[in-house]
Length: 316
Image (cartoon, rainbow, N blue to C red; front, side):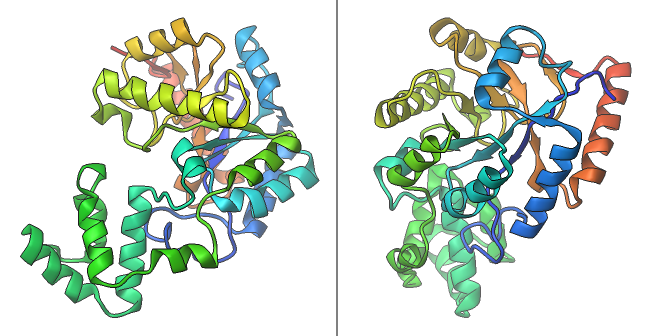
């Protein structure tokens, strides 16, 4: 064991079949796989609520507590109709990090979901070559494969995907009518009624290390305050989109000054941190193995880093 006994697994979605807006982004687990993973965590750790987690963190006892707390990013619809029923049945608390934009606008679509949907639509309908021609003609973008759009388009030029949706006649409203992408306000309120915690996840889901300090603060604070207002909450936690890599200590200090009760969630596996208002999670979907193999391997890796004096994330 590495000296850290608690574990914070995090996921985005659990579903038995393909979800096109996620298909080209990351691997996710089926309900059967997810059930087995929860049973593994229950066998080796004690589940705790967010309130219990923050108390352990504040009194300095978290590292030596053999506990786990589950978190889920993005507020996807499957959190409501697949994940929450499994957790409720097993008595496992969790925190769901949501976007205020999705609460205010049911048609909101994260830019990488847009790209995945375009790739799926083009491949399904034999439009890949048309997409390449349109990209070259309109934007002078040349791709060997339309999957490379994931590396070519980001939040700054998402209008490219909007243009391609239109030119290839992708019907987003029809897609949403078959099954929503995000949870609604009503569904999130039902999660809260069942004892689950809600947190914020930024306004636009942009990598924080690509933003100015002022934009980082806006992404954090405006989303947090909107969600707290919409849901009648206070002091909700915050999870960095795409992780906390490269975020400077000045950001953490400002959060601590203005929102001392807010706990931040990163994705540094089992690392400790120079900032004392963040805890680090394990992104389960990054590993192509079940936790009975991945978690011990990660603990071993962290033990080696600790021996080398590299287990702490230091921030500029």
